[in-house]
Amino acid sequence: MPSETPPGWNFEQGLSDLETVVKELESGDLPLEKAIEIFERGVTLSDRCRKELEDAETRVEILLKRGDKIEAEPFKPTNE
Image (tube, rainbow, N blue to C red):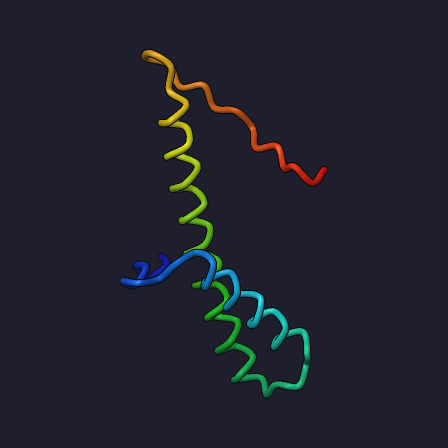
């Protein structure tokens, strides 16, 4: 079970921290215990970011609500 999101936490900073974790792990220059510690932090950050995205998706679905029916529309990136 992931830990609760701390007050003041935001998605953008969490994503940036997660990218830093990945770079550190990819470097391969870490002792095993330090690598495990950083990996655990990465899992926590990943869980928090995933939850934030799920919450945002729910909010978008509510905004798209039409009558008693929710019409979820898939996200279409503009750079494709």
